[in-house]
Image (tube, rainbow, N blue to C red; front, side, top):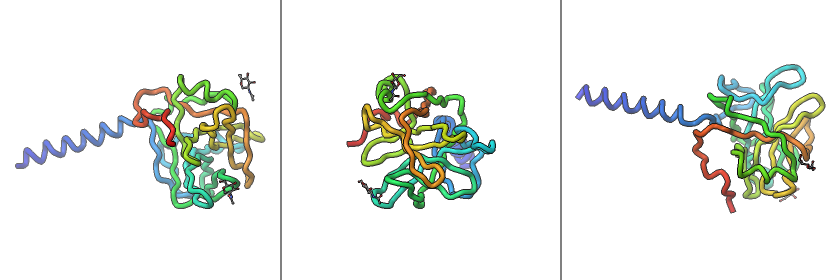
Length: 192
Ligand SMILES: *[C@@H]1O[C@H](CO)[C@@H](O)[C@H](O)[C@H]1NC(C)=O
Ligand SMILES: *[C@@H]1O[C@H](CO)[C@@H](O)[C@H](O)[C@H]1NC(C)=O
């Protein structure tokens, strides 16, 4: 009996560890103003040298969309979705045990789709039934994270929130992943 329990607990811990090891990146729950997880992935620092983070938020007003956005530690989180909107109850933060597998690829709104066969873009959300990728721009000496409208082939603008304004960019960096451990293997099929 005791032996069986021992085997069982060994199996359970093995499965848990296997699962943890399997995902190179994950979205964790985040409470705006709360503690930043120790493995949160930072896309860079703000003008004052403080690390920023990548969030994924639900915007319920008008649409119910999930959009990627900048997380400023200790501040409320907003997303760009037909204007600047506050995040609803769902806020997640991008975390990774293997940040070396992340790459920022420079591209623009006209050329983004030419890269989709060769690169694995990290999905940052869904808006109007289309996947959003995670974009990064340098803006006024700062950086900002926002949504890239991956579904608009040839006109895939990036939208982001910066100091209470919704802005867009035609040239930006997109977050890509070059490891093999992915669960979202069907990432290229867009929902209809
Ligand atoms: C609501 O969504 C529509 C597009 O479906 C948009 O044109 C409109 O500006 C949005 N309104 C607000 C208040 O976000
Ligand atoms: C996008 O990048 C390509 C390749 O660098 C360039 O030829 C094209 O003019 C760029 N388009 C825009 C809108 O910046």
